[in-house]
Image (cartoon, rainbow, N blue to C red):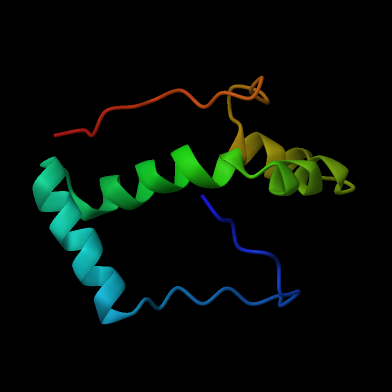
Length: 87
């Protein structure tokens, strides 16, 4: 998987294209999950595999709140537990 490199912009924009929304909707039907579960699981399983992102997280000063919200059970040893979609 190819990861996105930072653009050094502070604001987060949650608008997504119609095309992306259609992909998520179609995949949710295929997986028999909600669209929220599809996005949640995809992000958990993929973004946290980006070693540069993890290094960046660990390098930030005063990052206890951020780390505890991203890794509520502690920093994993390179593995993210697989979770099934909730019905």
